[in-house]
Length: 397
Ligand code: AMP
Image (cartoon, helix red, strand yellow):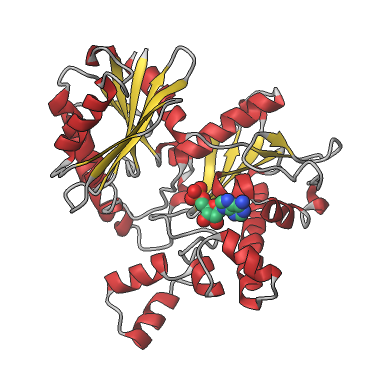
């Protein structure tokens, strides 16, 4: 069975074709700059040289057509017929509280997706265009939508509500939704497999730390709290995002700068975080290098990041009334031994003992706690595309 996983942005279309017999990727690629000058497709059959096509691509329908042609190409393709594709799985950033799990696309689902646009205005319109494009090219193909928010839908109301007047929730759905749910779900399942224990018996904290970062409390396999909120701005310090702060900072800064709501949003999302504090870069590698050379603001940014993660781990341990496993994933979580050690070395009082030698790994699965650590610490590379492919298979067949 072959499943095409699609992740569409407003001007891009990323795809991976999975062979579900062994969960391998047969081909993958990216259409970039859709509707903009210089649009192009880069396609790669696994193990082969990439194919690059630079041509005007006016919309997602044209982009999808190019992708399907590349999959059929006699040199770079991996399919003899498009009928070999059994289903398409689409990554959707926000399903609001309309969707508690992945579902098969129908007219009602499309309507609900449109209602979720205000919750992810930069992402959901692109996702919708991607679904419409493949429906246009392959009208009989089943499409499944897999939501970044779905895994967090098990949070209790007292964890997802904000202290605003209740009508704001009733009328405008203002609440915590979280993000990166597909990744949290994938690494939680995998960590339980690695440990050989049922997920349903574990209290786990999953730390997805990348350009955007979120931390989730996963109790007996269900998410009970997560650090991102209504939008992906909340939580720990990120590459260019503030993370948590007193909400009154917003009008305070606006009064000084005279920023509009949109400008303020941009300031908090694009100019803050590691970049804003260090003044060096949004990339932790650059910030770590600068700190090693004595840059104090770079060191402050690192301290804020590690302290923030540690506070969430403490809070979520209390929320779950215990802790068995911490999982690190995504760019920083998988690669920065310094961050993992910086977070864990202060948690010995609650049974977390990191093994410095084992922790010196990058980008691969490992248990990095000592054998006698009460709480196991794991590195698990995330694979959101594979999780989407699995969910698509589960829902469509
Ligand atoms: P992601 O958004 O998951 O792709 O993560 C991207 C971030 O991971 C980058 O901005 C870097 O800050 C971080 N990263 C990647 N590799 C390393 C590394 N070797 N050491 C520290 N941070 C890294």
